[in-house]
Image (tube, rainbow, N blue to C red):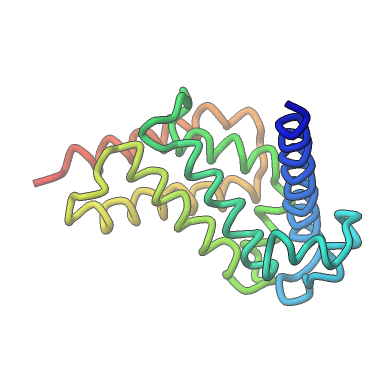
Length: 182
């Protein structure tokens, strides 16, 4: 039984370490260009040793991809998520305005936002149950791209009173696009 407790303790330590690294990446994205984020900065910000980082990840890109995968997993078919993907996206951007603006204002490559969009598209397709629909990729790109563009325009004004209206407009976009399937 002591082995089992040790395993659970080890699993919690691994989860805490990985979470610290992911949160460090999130903070660094808010203050650094992507090309300036390296393993040394991640380790320093997460307060982990470089060797510990390499036990879990090979690169900052791998940390980013795992973080996005967790978002997608939260909206998988088996998920108990009660909030639609695009509404979650509005709330996420509202809570992380500085990072959203930084990743969309041209000060960085579109690397981060493109990966994030791809993750949101995958989550949206899973939510809609349209992964096997041959036209779903185009329709999903239009819906998610439109949502991101609306968020970009909104993030410049940043009127928090508009969140409900923004969600409503994104739902209209989604319903229109899904209703127009032939």
